[in-house]
Length: 232
Image 1 (cartoon, helix red, strand yellow):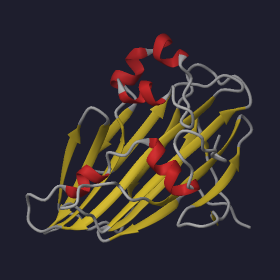
Image 2: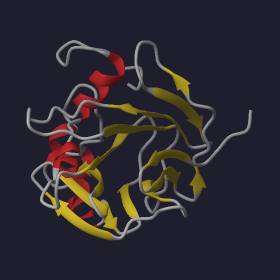
Image 3: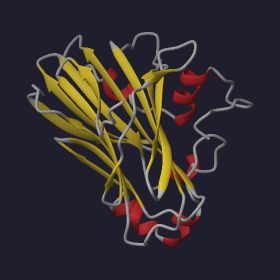
C-alpha cells in the first residue's frame, strides 16, 4: 500500500488538502479506513520521532433552526512524541486549496472560540475554521478528549498569540511548539460550505465554530461526559 502525504476533501470550489509535518518530516498516511456506524474515517501514521492519527468525517454543526449548510466536515490530528523533539522544531497542520480551486473572493474572521477564513464565488461560500489559540485552545487543553501540553501556555504564551494560527487566501495553518517524549497534542479544522440565500448569509462561517467534542461525538457516538475516543 502506497503512503500519501495529502488527503483531499472535495468542495464546490475545488479540493481542500490536509497535510501535516513534524519538523522537516512530512507525515505520510496509509489508506483511510471507515469507522463503524458513521461517516468518519481515520488512518494512523508513524515517524521516527512521533506517532499519530488523522480523523475526519461529516459533522452536524448544531446551527439554529433557520440556519443550515450543505456540508460540514470535522478534522482532528493527533500526534504523540516518541522522543524529546528539539526546541526549534514545530508541528504544522494545514488545510489549503489545491490547484483546482475556483474561488473569487476571500475574507478572514475571528471570535471567542474560532479563527476562520472564507472563500466565495457568486453565492457559494466555503469556510475553514480552527480553535482560537489564545484563550479557547487553552480551555480545550484541559478537557477529557482534546489534549495539549499545559506547559506550553506557561513556557511560550507568545507562540500562541503570534505564531499558532496562520489564515490566508491559501487556507489555514496551525503550528505548535516542540513536544517532549510521551506528550500528546491534537489539532482541529472544521470545513463547511453552502449555496447561500443571499450575500448576507454567513451560515457556513458559523458552522465552523465547532468544539472538539462535537467532532468526537460525531465520530464515536459517545456522551461527552463518559465517552471514549480511540484517538486518545
